[in-house]
Amino acid sequence: MNQNDIKYNASGYRDKVAETAIRKADRTPPEITELVDVIKKISGAYGYDVEGRIAFRCKKTNMIYK
Image (cartoon, rainbow, N blue to C red; front, side):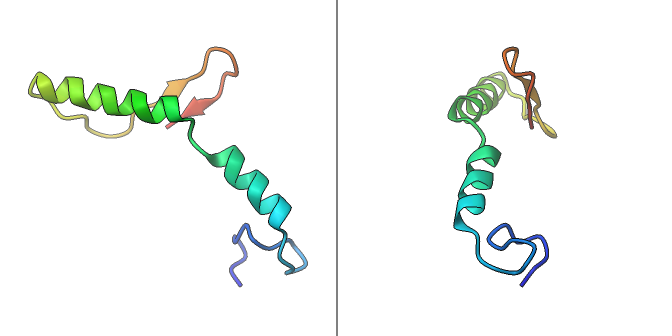
């Protein structure tokens, strides 16, 4: 068992509720994925490639997506 495995709690037992909650919280919103895709397509149409990461900050929640 890996220490960083989200499937198991600190005692080593499987914790499906925590695993589901962590996966849901870590999931990138679909609009961010779509936005990155649009930016890559626009830059490609102009003859450019996106280098490195693109970061977005949500104005409502102040969360940063990379």
